[in-house]
Image (cartoon, rainbow, N blue to C red; front, side):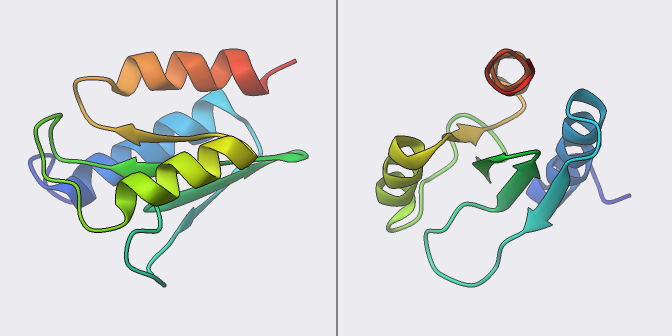
Length: 98
């Protein structure tokens, strides 16, 4: 596992948390396009997108706010960081579990 101080280490832990909360989900790492959120999560007939940040004060890259808003209007998308991770995971659990 990568260092927890790096965004990549945070993503690794977040992926495990998502798989625990949404059994059977697929968590896909996105790297195709500037601004597209880091993770695409497929769960049953739902999807959600998450942009991982090292901290709540981390800089947003060009187009990230646009894509989070666009994708949230389609389904669900959020910025997630260590400070809001539990809140986001709880919201995902409430939103996507029957």
